[in-house]
Length: 372
Image (cartoon, rainbow, N blue to C red; front, side, top):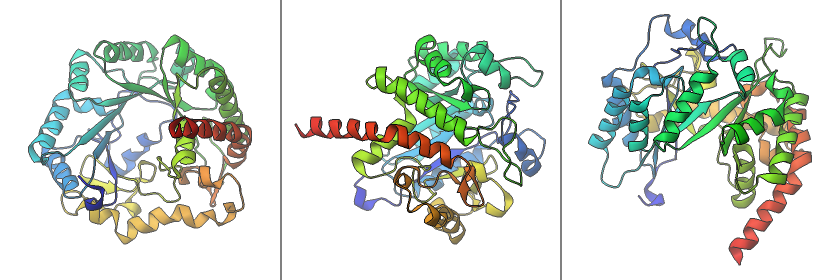
């Protein structure tokens, strides 16, 4: 589909079972959605599923990108996802491209899942916090059992079926103290070459960080140590999403993640009941944008409420404009802000001061190779 005929690009982050999960991770922010959606089990109906896909196809996209998350999305069952793909095939026009991603804790993956994910080329993100001791400290079942061994079985399923996957690691107040142990475990013990590190930032009404959250100093140290290891040994074999994002910005001038963008609004969240929200960190009644059963998603994306939400990030950048690192951090994700300032600001400054000149050199080398 020619770019000139497309609408503003956006993806969908779909919550087919809402916050339902077979685990009770100690730092999970989405379990709190019980207050919004009730304590009963949740599941997206086929009517909502089909309507969502038909609605999304009414916008004109080069690629229709859906990321399936939770809670734990595999609780919806592999047959649910077969029906989802069936609706895509039923309603997609000739030449339409779909990209599906699944974010999972990995504990429920079996050969049926492996066959399906391989057949339809889902990109899978699996949550692993590090070694067994680090992972099981927080990622436990409802009855308190650790889940590391079950996750490794899930990774084995993905490998046997040749499913493309990456690892998502939530950096919390414990693992932030051992950056190289976490990085080397993923690289050497698990043999994983696609890493994504996500900062745990939760705070109370006074801006005080909560038990599992990382401080700015800790986050800066964590990133610096991982960068040094990556820069010295792994530039050609390990992909760290943050480093890739910065290099992409240096090479193209464009942000390829919402956190690195001046404004929010790169995706919409669709909850199990069809409700649409601007971000999974801001699924709350006052920010509900509509429902896939009633409003076109493209219209929701351009609605006054969504525009106001998207611009909140940019409006708080005035205090950051004199900072040399603002083109890269863009004032940080709004979820990390308290009173319009990132709680991790000093940590980001430490990292960029430490790594940016070397990342610029890598980008320059890439440009020279392509020019030659």
